[in-house]
Length: 154
Image 1: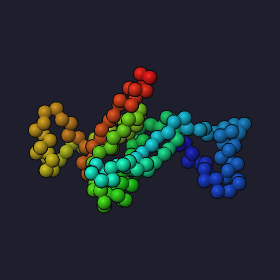
Image 2: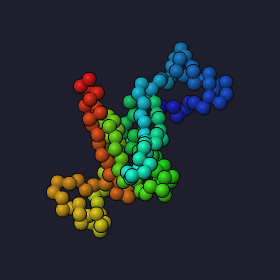
Image 3: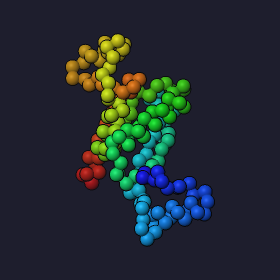
Image 4: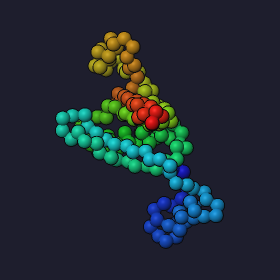
């Protein structure tokens, strides 16, 4: 995060020293991440059920929901451009992250109401209290806050 102006490739001695100085120099302008955001892909089927890590990103938790929403969109595009041909369309994004991450997912996965002409509408609209909002291509969001609750309790 926050490294738009910093060459973190460390392909040359100069870029390596510049990155080191940006974090450890007399006037540090960057810092280490304090936590890690991990993204995985997983198919909901009887085969290939194991998760595939696709992103490990150091974070200092300073990002805002729109920045995280951009990351979610990027992951959605990655699914659609790679494994969707084998496993089908992405239909759910689930996470156990902090409120900023949940809001970012909400912005991507819940801006639209399910189209009344969609075949699913006939089934889902008859279920009282069911939220029928979704994102592009009917992708939905599933929040899993128990991870955060466990972290607070222990």
